[in-house]
Image (cartoon, rainbow, N blue to C red):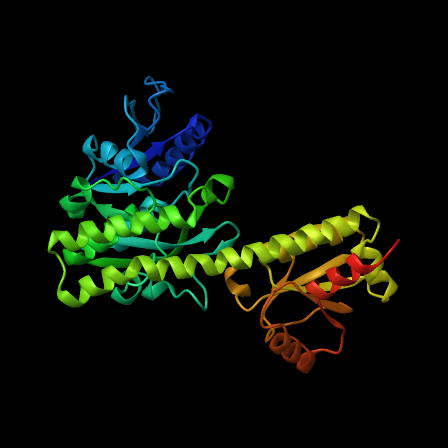
Length: 385
């Protein structure tokens, strides 16, 4: 029996993504070209910018395309619901305009969904897998997570039965954007939706400047509005309502922690670049120590930028070391401390906390200098060319 899928893509200042979305959904639809077709797809672009009309005559030989222009701005949730109202599929996939899916996304999800109302897959966030030793895939939709913090589930990695999308989510469009995904999962929980897990990595959330447009306080207001709507709905018991009341403050604390971390990272990078501008090269600093082949501990933003600077300075970065190495994709080898191997003559720690413990663990395994990026930057800033 052929399954019918509706892919709903809200578009806001996103004309440049339309052709890319059509191409990747066409490639995904090609997986249905068997002796007996497995599924068909309609791609719905829900334009949310009344000042910019999209072409309505888009066509494809492989998928149906609908373009819904608008005379009002509804926000992301409103645009998704606008598209949902025009969807004819049995299954719904809410995809952001710059998200990426693998060619076998729909085939794999349909093969594994069974009688579940929702299935979610593993995914990448930039070049890192979203789930690792700290963010466990199997518990991402557990009650303990969705009632205490923003879930680690993006709508783009989920395929949902249209009939399982709760009316309360469809009828309560948040005026403060940011928490509509979370509200959808909480509403589905309240209606005892059955959830299936797909271990395949089928989705990539693209990181760019627009991903950071929602600041902490706006997210807090959205969380408060969501909690108010859900408590008023009467869907939850007294204990769950208590958790919902605490959720905005819990999320606020969690969001401020990474912001503080990001500020420190920004300061370190700023000082490092300033030192370079004044002729105090990190490459010369390392060469003066007799170091030319480096391993970087920490494959996050700071480690990645440090690698670029070292590359330009003629210092070879042989590998990254990261406790979540198995979940990260890089263009050079990446190891955990336990699996560490390779030929290098120094390690730079690009982390900003827990350095002493990591240094001790590294020195148990290898006999090379271990340096903190914070200390290197301080010395560079104090040096005079």
